[in-house]
Length: 459
Picture 1: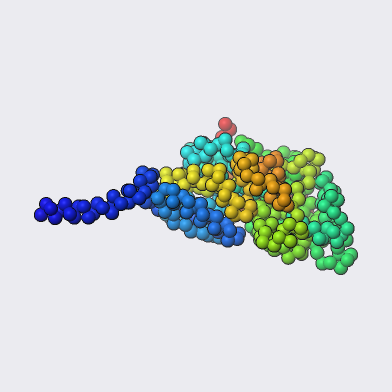
Picture 2: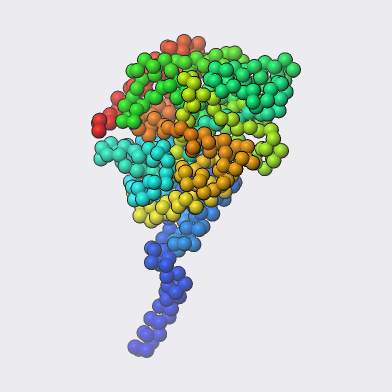
Protein backbone atom coordinates (compact mmCIF):
# COMPACT_ATOMS: atom_id res chain seq x y z
CA UNK A 1 0.00 0.00 0.00
CA UNK A 2 2.82 2.40 0.91
CA UNK A 3 4.54 1.58 -2.41
CA UNK A 4 1.29 2.34 -4.24
CA UNK A 5 0.92 5.69 -2.46
CA UNK A 6 4.50 6.62 -3.36
CA UNK A 7 3.76 5.85 -7.02
CA UNK A 8 0.62 8.03 -6.92
CA UNK A 9 2.48 10.87 -5.24
CA UNK A 10 5.28 10.64 -7.80
CA UNK A 11 2.78 10.70 -10.66
CA UNK A 12 1.12 13.80 -9.24
CA UNK A 13 4.39 15.62 -8.59
CA UNK A 14 6.09 14.99 -11.92
CA UNK A 15 3.94 17.46 -13.92
CA UNK A 16 4.46 20.14 -11.27
CA UNK A 17 8.22 19.55 -11.27
CA UNK A 18 8.17 19.80 -15.03
CA UNK A 19 6.47 23.17 -14.86
CA UNK A 20 8.97 24.42 -12.32
CA UNK A 21 11.87 23.28 -14.49
CA UNK A 22 10.37 24.88 -17.58
CA UNK A 23 9.55 28.26 -16.01
CA UNK A 24 11.26 28.79 -12.64
CA UNK A 25 11.42 32.59 -13.02
CA UNK A 26 7.77 32.89 -14.00
CA UNK A 27 6.65 30.85 -10.99
CA UNK A 28 8.83 32.96 -8.72
CA UNK A 29 7.10 36.08 -10.06
CA UNK A 30 3.58 34.96 -9.22
CA UNK A 31 3.11 33.32 -12.61
CA UNK A 32 -0.02 31.50 -13.54
CA UNK A 33 -2.46 34.31 -12.75
CA UNK A 34 -4.89 35.85 -15.19
CA UNK A 35 -5.06 39.62 -15.44
CA UNK A 36 -8.24 41.18 -16.82
CA UNK A 37 -7.46 44.13 -19.09
CA UNK A 38 -9.97 46.39 -20.83
CA UNK A 39 -8.51 48.51 -23.64
CA UNK A 40 -9.83 51.11 -26.02
CA UNK A 41 -10.22 49.71 -29.52
CA UNK A 42 -7.81 51.47 -31.83
CA UNK A 43 -8.59 53.90 -34.61
CA UNK A 44 -7.10 51.36 -37.01
CA UNK A 45 -5.89 47.72 -36.70
CA UNK A 46 -2.22 48.58 -36.10
CA UNK A 47 -3.09 50.04 -32.70
CA UNK A 48 -4.81 46.86 -31.54
CA UNK A 49 -1.94 44.76 -32.86
CA UNK A 50 0.52 46.89 -30.88
CA UNK A 51 -1.45 46.27 -27.67
CA UNK A 52 -1.50 42.53 -28.31
CA UNK A 53 2.24 42.60 -28.93
CA UNK A 54 3.27 44.14 -25.59
CA UNK A 55 0.78 41.92 -23.75
CA UNK A 56 2.30 38.83 -25.35
CA UNK A 57 5.78 39.99 -24.31
CA UNK A 58 4.63 40.45 -20.71
CA UNK A 59 2.97 37.02 -20.68
CA UNK A 60 6.17 35.43 -21.94
CA UNK A 61 8.26 37.28 -19.37
CA UNK A 62 6.10 36.53 -16.33
CA UNK A 63 4.20 33.33 -17.02
CA UNK A 64 0.91 35.08 -16.38
CA UNK A 65 -1.89 35.46 -18.87
CA UNK A 66 -4.06 38.41 -19.85
CA UNK A 67 -7.74 38.30 -20.64
CA UNK A 68 -7.90 41.22 -23.06
CA UNK A 69 -11.13 42.88 -24.17
CA UNK A 70 -11.37 45.78 -26.63
CA UNK A 71 -14.23 48.27 -26.41
CA UNK A 72 -15.10 51.33 -28.47
CA UNK A 73 -14.25 54.86 -27.38
CA UNK A 74 -17.94 55.48 -26.65
CA UNK A 75 -18.63 52.21 -24.80
CA UNK A 76 -15.59 51.73 -22.58
CA UNK A 77 -16.15 54.64 -20.14
CA UNK A 78 -19.79 53.62 -19.65
CA UNK A 79 -18.84 49.98 -19.17
CA UNK A 80 -16.16 50.89 -16.65
CA UNK A 81 -18.55 53.02 -14.58
CA UNK A 82 -21.12 50.20 -14.60
CA UNK A 83 -18.45 47.70 -13.52
CA UNK A 84 -17.34 49.94 -10.64
CA UNK A 85 -20.92 50.36 -9.46
CA UNK A 86 -21.48 46.61 -9.67
CA UNK A 87 -18.22 45.81 -7.85
CA UNK A 88 -16.90 43.63 -10.68
CA UNK A 89 -14.04 45.59 -12.20
CA UNK A 90 -11.14 44.77 -14.53
CA UNK A 91 -7.61 44.82 -13.18
CA UNK A 92 -6.46 47.43 -15.71
CA UNK A 93 -8.49 49.81 -17.87
CA UNK A 94 -7.38 52.18 -20.59
CA UNK A 95 -9.85 54.50 -22.38
CA UNK A 96 -8.82 57.12 -24.95
CA UNK A 97 -11.16 59.84 -23.71
CA UNK A 98 -11.25 59.04 -19.97
CA UNK A 99 -8.88 61.87 -19.08
CA UNK A 100 -11.39 64.42 -20.39
CA UNK A 101 -14.33 63.52 -18.18
CA UNK A 102 -13.90 60.30 -16.20
CA UNK A 103 -10.50 59.60 -14.60
CA UNK A 104 -10.32 62.82 -12.49
CA UNK A 105 -13.87 62.19 -11.30
CA UNK A 106 -13.15 58.57 -10.31
CA UNK A 107 -10.04 59.67 -8.43
CA UNK A 108 -12.06 62.33 -6.60
CA UNK A 109 -14.58 59.70 -5.51
CA UNK A 110 -11.87 57.30 -4.28
CA UNK A 111 -12.71 54.70 -6.92
CA UNK A 112 -9.20 54.26 -8.28
CA UNK A 113 -6.17 52.55 -6.76
CA UNK A 114 -3.13 54.71 -6.10
CA UNK A 115 -0.36 53.90 -8.57
CA UNK A 116 2.40 55.73 -6.74
CA UNK A 117 4.36 52.47 -6.75
CA UNK A 118 4.36 52.54 -10.55
CA UNK A 119 4.84 56.22 -11.34
CA UNK A 120 7.14 57.50 -8.58
CA UNK A 121 10.12 55.26 -9.48
CA UNK A 122 9.83 56.54 -13.08
CA UNK A 123 9.11 60.23 -12.37
CA UNK A 124 12.34 61.45 -13.97
CA UNK A 125 11.36 59.82 -17.26
CA UNK A 126 8.08 61.70 -17.71
CA UNK A 127 7.39 65.27 -18.76
CA UNK A 128 6.11 67.67 -16.13
CA UNK A 129 2.78 67.89 -17.97
CA UNK A 130 2.40 64.11 -17.94
CA UNK A 131 3.00 63.95 -14.18
CA UNK A 132 0.63 66.84 -13.46
CA UNK A 133 -2.02 65.10 -15.54
CA UNK A 134 -2.08 61.98 -13.37
CA UNK A 135 -1.47 63.58 -9.95
CA UNK A 136 -5.15 63.72 -9.02
CA UNK A 137 -7.10 64.79 -5.96
CA UNK A 138 -8.94 62.24 -3.82
CA UNK A 139 -11.72 63.94 -1.87
CA UNK A 140 -11.97 61.03 0.59
CA UNK A 141 -8.33 61.23 1.65
CA UNK A 142 -7.99 64.93 0.73
CA UNK A 143 -4.59 64.16 -0.77
CA UNK A 144 -3.20 64.23 -4.29
CA UNK A 145 -1.59 61.03 -5.49
CA UNK A 146 -0.84 59.32 -8.76
CA UNK A 147 -4.09 57.61 -9.75
CA UNK A 148 -3.24 56.91 -13.40
CA UNK A 149 -0.16 55.83 -15.36
CA UNK A 150 0.80 58.05 -18.34
CA UNK A 151 1.20 56.17 -21.61
CA UNK A 152 0.89 58.65 -24.46
CA UNK A 153 -0.41 62.08 -25.31
CA UNK A 154 -2.10 64.25 -27.91
CA UNK A 155 -2.35 67.93 -28.77
CA UNK A 156 -4.39 69.96 -31.24
CA UNK A 157 -2.57 69.92 -34.58
CA UNK A 158 -3.24 71.74 -37.83
CA UNK A 159 -3.39 69.91 -41.17
CA UNK A 160 -3.90 71.29 -44.67
CA UNK A 161 -3.89 70.21 -48.31
CA UNK A 162 -0.92 71.51 -50.32
CA UNK A 163 -2.75 71.13 -53.68
CA UNK A 164 -5.43 73.57 -52.51
CA UNK A 165 -2.76 76.04 -51.46
CA UNK A 166 -1.07 75.76 -54.85
CA UNK A 167 -4.38 76.13 -56.69
CA UNK A 168 -4.97 79.38 -54.80
CA UNK A 169 -1.52 80.62 -55.86
CA UNK A 170 0.27 80.18 -52.52
CA UNK A 171 3.17 78.18 -51.09
CA UNK A 172 3.67 76.99 -47.50
CA UNK A 173 6.07 79.92 -46.97
CA UNK A 174 3.16 82.31 -47.51
CA UNK A 175 1.32 81.11 -44.39
CA UNK A 176 1.50 83.92 -41.79
CA UNK A 177 2.37 83.22 -38.18
CA UNK A 178 0.60 86.14 -36.49
CA UNK A 179 -2.78 85.14 -35.09
CA UNK A 180 -5.27 87.23 -37.03
CA UNK A 181 -3.31 87.04 -40.29
CA UNK A 182 -3.06 83.26 -39.99
CA UNK A 183 -6.82 82.72 -39.92
CA UNK A 184 -7.55 85.38 -42.55
CA UNK A 185 -5.10 83.60 -44.84
CA UNK A 186 -7.20 80.44 -44.92
CA UNK A 187 -10.34 82.45 -45.57
CA UNK A 188 -8.52 84.04 -48.49
CA UNK A 189 -7.62 80.60 -49.83
CA UNK A 190 -11.30 79.63 -49.81
CA UNK A 191 -12.26 82.84 -51.58
CA UNK A 192 -9.77 82.19 -54.37
CA UNK A 193 -10.80 78.55 -54.76
CA UNK A 194 -14.48 79.50 -54.87
CA UNK A 195 -13.68 81.99 -57.64
CA UNK A 196 -12.34 78.98 -59.58
CA UNK A 197 -15.59 77.13 -59.09
CA UNK A 198 -14.32 74.80 -56.35
CA UNK A 199 -16.92 74.02 -53.67
CA UNK A 200 -14.60 73.85 -50.67
CA UNK A 201 -14.52 75.35 -47.18
CA UNK A 202 -11.50 76.92 -45.51
CA UNK A 203 -11.83 75.60 -41.97
CA UNK A 204 -12.74 72.10 -40.77
CA UNK A 205 -13.37 73.18 -37.18
CA UNK A 206 -15.86 71.18 -35.04
CA UNK A 207 -18.31 73.57 -33.37
CA UNK A 208 -20.85 71.08 -32.04
CA UNK A 209 -21.80 69.90 -28.56
CA UNK A 210 -20.98 66.28 -29.34
CA UNK A 211 -17.79 64.33 -28.68
CA UNK A 212 -14.47 65.73 -27.48
CA UNK A 213 -12.93 67.53 -30.48
CA UNK A 214 -15.19 70.56 -30.12
CA UNK A 215 -14.12 71.31 -26.57
CA UNK A 216 -10.51 70.54 -27.39
CA UNK A 217 -10.68 73.35 -29.97
CA UNK A 218 -12.45 75.71 -27.56
CA UNK A 219 -10.04 75.17 -24.67
CA UNK A 220 -6.98 75.50 -26.91
CA UNK A 221 -8.39 78.77 -28.24
CA UNK A 222 -8.83 79.96 -24.65
CA UNK A 223 -5.10 79.45 -24.14
CA UNK A 224 -4.38 81.30 -27.38
CA UNK A 225 -6.37 84.24 -26.02
CA UNK A 226 -4.45 84.13 -22.74
CA UNK A 227 -6.99 82.51 -20.40
CA UNK A 228 -6.53 79.81 -17.77
CA UNK A 229 -9.84 78.49 -16.48
CA UNK A 230 -8.36 76.73 -13.43
CA UNK A 231 -5.09 77.42 -11.60
CA UNK A 232 -2.63 74.82 -10.32
CA UNK A 233 -4.41 74.73 -6.95
CA UNK A 234 -7.69 73.75 -8.59
CA UNK A 235 -9.35 77.13 -8.13
CA UNK A 236 -11.74 78.46 -10.78
CA UNK A 237 -10.62 81.66 -12.54
CA UNK A 238 -13.78 82.72 -14.40
CA UNK A 239 -14.39 85.75 -12.18
CA UNK A 240 -11.25 87.34 -13.56
CA UNK A 241 -12.30 89.88 -16.24
CA UNK A 242 -9.56 88.76 -18.64
CA UNK A 243 -10.79 85.15 -18.51
CA UNK A 244 -14.38 86.14 -19.27
CA UNK A 245 -13.24 88.40 -22.11
CA UNK A 246 -11.10 85.63 -23.58
CA UNK A 247 -14.11 83.27 -23.58
CA UNK A 248 -16.23 85.90 -25.34
CA UNK A 249 -13.52 86.39 -27.96
CA UNK A 250 -13.33 82.63 -28.60
CA UNK A 251 -17.10 82.38 -29.10
CA UNK A 252 -17.04 85.42 -31.41
CA UNK A 253 -14.06 84.01 -33.36
CA UNK A 254 -15.93 80.77 -34.05
CA UNK A 255 -19.22 82.51 -34.78
CA UNK A 256 -17.62 84.95 -37.23
CA UNK A 257 -15.91 82.13 -39.15
CA UNK A 258 -19.14 80.14 -39.30
CA UNK A 259 -21.38 83.05 -40.22
CA UNK A 260 -18.86 84.10 -42.85
CA UNK A 261 -19.33 80.75 -44.58
CA UNK A 262 -15.78 79.50 -43.91
CA UNK A 263 -16.84 76.51 -41.78
CA UNK A 264 -19.16 73.85 -43.27
CA UNK A 265 -22.79 74.25 -42.10
CA UNK A 266 -22.82 70.65 -40.84
CA UNK A 267 -20.00 71.36 -38.38
CA UNK A 268 -22.60 72.27 -35.74
CA UNK A 269 -23.43 68.54 -35.60
CA UNK A 270 -19.96 67.04 -36.06
CA UNK A 271 -18.78 64.21 -33.82
CA UNK A 272 -15.11 63.40 -33.35
CA UNK A 273 -14.66 61.57 -36.66
CA UNK A 274 -16.61 63.97 -38.86
CA UNK A 275 -13.96 66.64 -39.35
CA UNK A 276 -11.50 63.84 -40.22
CA UNK A 277 -13.93 62.58 -42.85
CA UNK A 278 -14.59 66.07 -44.25
CA UNK A 279 -10.88 66.76 -44.48
CA UNK A 280 -9.83 63.42 -45.96
CA UNK A 281 -12.58 63.74 -48.58
CA UNK A 282 -11.14 67.21 -49.33
CA UNK A 283 -14.25 69.16 -48.50
CA UNK A 284 -12.10 71.54 -46.40
CA UNK A 285 -8.69 73.13 -46.97
CA UNK A 286 -7.45 72.81 -43.39
CA UNK A 287 -8.59 71.28 -40.14
CA UNK A 288 -7.60 71.13 -36.51
CA UNK A 289 -7.49 67.70 -34.95
CA UNK A 290 -6.20 66.17 -31.72
CA UNK A 291 -3.57 63.44 -32.31
CA UNK A 292 -2.05 62.39 -35.63
CA UNK A 293 -4.98 60.21 -36.61
CA UNK A 294 -5.32 61.95 -39.98
CA UNK A 295 -1.73 61.35 -41.17
CA UNK A 296 -1.82 57.85 -39.68
CA UNK A 297 -4.98 57.06 -41.65
CA UNK A 298 -3.19 58.09 -44.87
CA UNK A 299 0.13 56.44 -44.09
CA UNK A 300 -0.45 53.68 -46.64
CA UNK A 301 -0.85 56.24 -49.43
CA UNK A 302 2.76 57.51 -49.78
CA UNK A 303 1.99 60.06 -52.50
CA UNK A 304 -0.69 61.67 -50.33
CA UNK A 305 1.14 61.27 -47.01
CA UNK A 306 4.47 62.66 -48.22
CA UNK A 307 3.54 65.22 -50.89
CA UNK A 308 -0.05 66.42 -50.52
CA UNK A 309 -0.84 66.41 -46.79
CA UNK A 310 0.91 68.92 -44.50
CA UNK A 311 1.13 69.21 -40.73
CA UNK A 312 1.49 72.83 -39.68
CA UNK A 313 2.88 74.32 -36.48
CA UNK A 314 0.27 76.48 -34.73
CA UNK A 315 0.41 80.25 -35.16
CA UNK A 316 1.69 82.54 -32.47
CA UNK A 317 -0.79 83.34 -29.74
CA UNK A 318 -2.78 86.56 -29.68
CA UNK A 319 0.02 88.10 -27.60
CA UNK A 320 2.55 87.35 -30.35
CA UNK A 321 4.36 84.71 -28.29
CA UNK A 322 4.66 80.97 -29.13
CA UNK A 323 1.43 79.31 -28.12
CA UNK A 324 1.34 76.76 -25.31
CA UNK A 325 -0.22 73.49 -26.45
CA UNK A 326 -2.96 71.98 -24.32
CA UNK A 327 -1.83 68.37 -23.97
CA UNK A 328 -4.18 65.52 -23.12
CA UNK A 329 -2.26 62.71 -21.43
CA UNK A 330 -3.74 59.27 -22.02
CA UNK A 331 -3.33 56.96 -19.04
CA UNK A 332 -4.24 53.55 -17.68
CA UNK A 333 -5.93 53.03 -14.31
CA UNK A 334 -6.45 50.28 -11.75
CA UNK A 335 -10.03 50.48 -10.42
CA UNK A 336 -10.64 50.13 -6.70
CA UNK A 337 -11.59 46.53 -6.01
CA UNK A 338 -9.39 45.02 -8.73
CA UNK A 339 -8.72 41.36 -7.88
CA UNK A 340 -5.07 41.47 -8.91
CA UNK A 341 -4.07 45.04 -8.12
CA UNK A 342 -0.44 44.27 -7.29
CA UNK A 343 -0.01 42.23 -10.45
CA UNK A 344 -1.66 45.05 -12.40
CA UNK A 345 0.99 47.43 -11.08
CA UNK A 346 3.72 45.08 -12.29
CA UNK A 347 2.03 44.92 -15.68
CA UNK A 348 1.95 48.72 -15.95
CA UNK A 349 5.53 49.02 -14.70
CA UNK A 350 6.54 46.70 -17.54
CA UNK A 351 4.60 48.76 -20.08
CA UNK A 352 6.21 52.09 -19.13
CA UNK A 353 9.73 50.84 -19.65
CA UNK A 354 10.97 53.35 -22.25
CA UNK A 355 11.76 50.75 -24.92
CA UNK A 356 8.46 48.92 -24.45
CA UNK A 357 6.43 52.13 -24.53
CA UNK A 358 8.35 53.43 -27.53
CA UNK A 359 7.71 50.23 -29.49
CA UNK A 360 4.01 50.39 -28.64
CA UNK A 361 3.67 53.99 -29.85
CA UNK A 362 5.62 53.39 -33.06
CA UNK A 363 3.71 50.22 -33.83
CA UNK A 364 0.56 52.33 -33.55
CA UNK A 365 1.91 54.29 -36.55
CA UNK A 366 2.72 57.37 -34.50
CA UNK A 367 -0.87 58.43 -33.90
CA UNK A 368 0.04 59.33 -30.31
CA UNK A 369 3.18 61.06 -29.06
CA UNK A 370 5.54 59.98 -26.24
CA UNK A 371 5.22 61.20 -22.66
CA UNK A 372 8.91 60.46 -22.12
CA UNK A 373 11.53 62.84 -23.60
CA UNK A 374 14.04 59.97 -23.51
CA UNK A 375 12.10 58.36 -26.37
CA UNK A 376 12.59 61.50 -28.46
CA UNK A 377 16.28 61.58 -27.58
CA UNK A 378 17.03 57.91 -28.25
CA UNK A 379 14.77 57.13 -31.19
CA UNK A 380 15.17 59.14 -34.43
CA UNK A 381 11.70 58.00 -35.50
CA UNK A 382 10.18 61.01 -33.68
CA UNK A 383 12.48 63.65 -35.22
CA UNK A 384 13.26 62.21 -38.67
CA UNK A 385 12.65 65.12 -41.04
CA UNK A 386 11.99 62.78 -43.95
CA UNK A 387 8.58 62.32 -42.35
CA UNK A 388 6.48 65.48 -42.93
CA UNK A 389 4.21 65.03 -39.91
CA UNK A 390 5.66 63.31 -36.83
CA UNK A 391 8.63 65.69 -36.26
CA UNK A 392 6.30 68.70 -36.48
CA UNK A 393 4.01 67.19 -33.84
CA UNK A 394 7.01 66.25 -31.70
CA UNK A 395 8.32 69.81 -31.78
CA UNK A 396 4.90 71.18 -30.86
CA UNK A 397 3.70 68.90 -28.08
CA UNK A 398 6.81 67.28 -26.59
CA UNK A 399 9.67 69.75 -27.08
CA UNK A 400 7.51 72.88 -27.06
CA UNK A 401 5.57 74.58 -24.26
CA UNK A 402 2.69 72.47 -22.95
CA UNK A 403 0.02 72.59 -20.26
CA UNK A 404 -2.32 70.01 -18.70
CA UNK A 405 -6.07 70.18 -18.99
CA UNK A 406 -7.96 72.07 -16.23
CA UNK A 407 -9.71 68.93 -14.92
CA UNK A 408 -6.38 67.55 -13.80
CA UNK A 409 -6.29 70.28 -11.17
CA UNK A 410 -9.98 70.05 -10.31
CA UNK A 411 -12.33 67.28 -11.50
CA UNK A 412 -15.19 69.78 -11.67
CA UNK A 413 -13.89 70.71 -15.11
CA UNK A 414 -14.35 67.09 -16.19
CA UNK A 415 -18.06 67.67 -15.66
CA UNK A 416 -17.81 70.91 -17.65
CA UNK A 417 -16.47 68.79 -20.50
CA UNK A 418 -19.02 66.01 -20.04
CA UNK A 419 -21.89 68.50 -20.05
CA UNK A 420 -20.51 70.16 -23.20
CA UNK A 421 -20.86 73.56 -21.55
CA UNK A 422 -18.73 75.45 -24.06
CA UNK A 423 -20.12 73.62 -27.09
CA UNK A 424 -23.63 74.54 -26.01
CA UNK A 425 -22.55 78.16 -25.52
CA UNK A 426 -21.30 78.30 -29.10
CA UNK A 427 -24.52 76.62 -30.26
CA UNK A 428 -26.59 79.23 -28.44
CA UNK A 429 -24.93 81.88 -30.58
CA UNK A 430 -24.89 80.04 -33.92
CA UNK A 431 -28.28 78.33 -33.73
CA UNK A 432 -30.33 80.40 -31.30
CA UNK A 433 -28.99 83.89 -32.06
CA UNK A 434 -27.72 84.65 -28.56
CA UNK A 435 -25.03 87.34 -28.19
CA UNK A 436 -21.53 85.95 -27.40
CA UNK A 437 -21.34 87.78 -24.05
CA UNK A 438 -24.74 86.48 -23.00
CA UNK A 439 -23.84 82.90 -23.99
CA UNK A 440 -20.55 83.10 -22.10
CA UNK A 441 -22.17 84.51 -18.96
CA UNK A 442 -24.70 81.69 -19.03
CA UNK A 443 -21.88 79.16 -19.41
CA UNK A 444 -19.89 80.75 -16.57
CA UNK A 445 -22.91 80.57 -14.26
CA UNK A 446 -23.25 76.87 -15.02
CA UNK A 447 -19.52 76.28 -14.51
CA UNK A 448 -19.55 78.07 -11.15
CA UNK A 449 -22.47 75.92 -10.02
CA UNK A 450 -20.54 72.76 -10.94
CA UNK A 451 -17.40 73.97 -9.16
CA UNK A 452 -19.36 74.75 -6.00
CA UNK A 453 -19.61 70.98 -5.47
CA UNK A 454 -15.83 70.47 -5.73
CA UNK A 455 -14.06 72.42 -3.03
CA UNK A 456 -10.35 71.67 -2.73
CA UNK A 457 -8.75 73.06 0.47
CA UNK A 458 -5.84 75.43 -0.09
CA UNK A 459 -2.53 73.64 0.48
